[in-house]
Length: 318
Image (cartoon, rainbow, N blue to C red; front, side, top):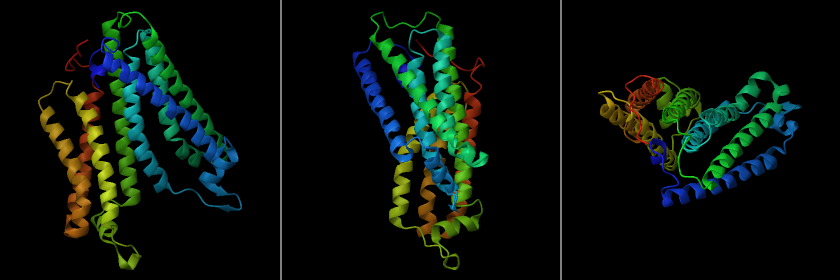
């Protein structure tokens, strides 16, 4: 994320090439998004209705747990994508208002697309067309961002911004603030998924991991626990590296302690399921407390990042 804190994309040949390759892969992802949506829904309101509400003759709403799991992973991926694209956008030489509009459109469209299914479930079958409209809004914003960055890279001028260093710095900080908002949404989805899938009582956690014959619940398998933990170790470490990178720009005494607490609580939270399943169900308290601590620290981190206007935030070097 060096280009976020400091300019110089065109002045660094390796970085310049890497950004071009990133844009090419992202363009392929954009095409893949359209293809997947077409194959799955065919841009048909009827297919979207069937997916979310079931057939009219046999109505059965889609599982909220399933949607929450998709949203959980989707927010992480979109947060990283938005952060990368927004930082690249603010390195271009366009007017600061144009850059803010591009980044803002990407944020709004991506977030709306992620929550589209929930909005439709709340509004009813008649709102199913929203899924297509919000998806196309996101696709338009994404290709607009890709094109804007590509045009900037093709320009022969020196790698300079529009000359207003303060404006560009503030623009990058606004991007960080939007990432902090995504972090808040991530915490909310975390809590909702935990409540729906496991439950916030010690008994619920014991039942989820160790099983409950009376409720016909099987204990979690080692394969299942390893699969879930392995994915989360990678995803959470990348996410926390990004978050703590931004926290390092803020001057407050507890930066090191906060960073250590974030990584430690995440590690314990991911690992605690193994303890509940194979050591003792009494470790359910560790699972619950580490989850609550981790998410409380994420909330605190977002509060710090959204305070970027204060003098305590150091100015990145350009």
